[in-house]
Amino acid sequence: MNFGTRLLHNGNEVDPFTGAASVPLYQASTYHQADIDNPGTFDYARSGNPTREALEQTIAELEGGTRGFAFASGMAAISTVFLLFSKGDHLVVSEDLYGGTFRVLTEVLPRLGIQATFVDTTDLDQVRAAIRSQTRALYIETPSNPTLKVTDLKGATELAKEQGLYTIVDNTFLTPCYQRPLEQGADIVIHSATKFIAGHSDVVSGLVAVGDASLADRLALLQNALGSVLGVQDCWLTMRGLKTLKTRMDTSSASADYIARELRRFPEIRRVYYTGLEDHPGHRIQSRQSEGHGAVLSFDLGDGQRVRQVLSRVRLPLVAVSLGAVESILSYPAKMSHAAMPPSERAKRGVTDGLLRLSVGLEDPDDLLEDLERAIRGRRISSVGTEWRASIV
Ligand SMILES: *Cc1c(COP(=O)(O)O)cnc(C)c1O
Image: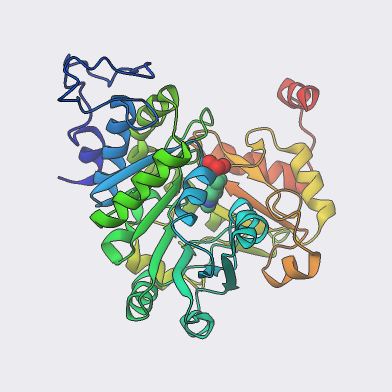
C-alpha cells in the first residue's frame, strides 16, 4: 500500500476493543489486574497505554521500523535517545543543528561525560576525520535549518556502519511522507511531531522509530525509566494530525516550490534557499534520497532593516518560532533559533541578519506571495487584519 493509504489504514486506526473509528483516549493511569499471576498487557500508564501504543505502532509502521516511542516533546525524544550513551562516549553531529539539540549536547551531556564534535555532515570527509575510537554515533539533521543543507544519508550511514557507529537522523523537516532514513540504513529516526506530523500548532510532541529489536528494548527501558512519555490527550491529537500528513505535505510543498521560484525574481531578495530549486547545492542528493522537498524555504533580504519592515507588515503568516503547521509561519533565525550564536558563526552558516525562514502552510500560495510582496515592497496595507495583529503583539 502507498504512504497516503497507510496513514489511514495501518492496523492502529480502529479501537480493537470497541471498533471505534478513532482510538479512544484511555485516560487511565493504572489497570485492574484480574489475575495477579497472569498480568495483562498494561499495568501502569508510564509503562504503556493503548492510546499511546496506537501512535507508537503507527510511527514505526510509517518509518519502516519495528518499534516506535512517543515522548513529551521532540527534545524529550532527543534527550532520551542521547541517554543510550555513557560516560566517555563521543558523538559526531551536524553543525547546522536545531538549537535545543545543540543546548543538550553542549550544556547537559558534557556534565555526564558525553562529548560531541560538530561538523558539516554534507562533507563526509569531515565526518570521517572527526571519528575517534570513543565515537559511538553520527547524528544528522537533513535538510538542515535554516539554509537547508543536505546530507547524503546513504553515504553517511555506510560510513557509520563501517566504523561501527549508530546513525541517528532528525527527520522533522521531511517526515516519513518524503524521507525514510531507516530504509537508507539509519538506526534511529527522531521527530519533533510538534511540527508537520501533528501539523496544527496545537500540541508539543516527539516520536522515535527504530528497526533493531535490542535497540528498541534499550529505548523502551529508558522511556519507562525516565518517564519522558507523551500524555494520552497529546497522543490523540498527534494521531489526529497525522491522518492528513500526506495531503498537507503535498499541498504545502507545491506552494513552497511555487513561492521559492517567484521570490527568486524579486530584486530585493539576494538569495532563496529551497532544495527543490535546481541550483541549490543539495538538490541532486535530496531528489535521490527523498520523495519531496518539503514546505520550508528561506530567503535573504540583505539586511535587518528590511527584515523588520517585512515582519511588521505581513498579514498572513504567523511571525513565530516553529514550523510545519496548517498556517504559514515566518521566522527570523538571527533573533529566534540562532540568537545564541555569535554573529560571525551565524554569518559563516548563511544565517545573516537578512535571512527569513518561511514554513508554508495551506493558504492559497498566490495570497501568500501577494502578502510577502506587499510587505517587501512596502506598500501600505488598508486592512483591519493588520491592526488586529498589531494589537495582540
Ligand atoms: C522543533 C524541533 C525540535 C524540538 O522539538 P520540540 O517538540 O520543540 O521539543 C527538534 N528538531 C527539529 C528539527 C525541530 O524543528
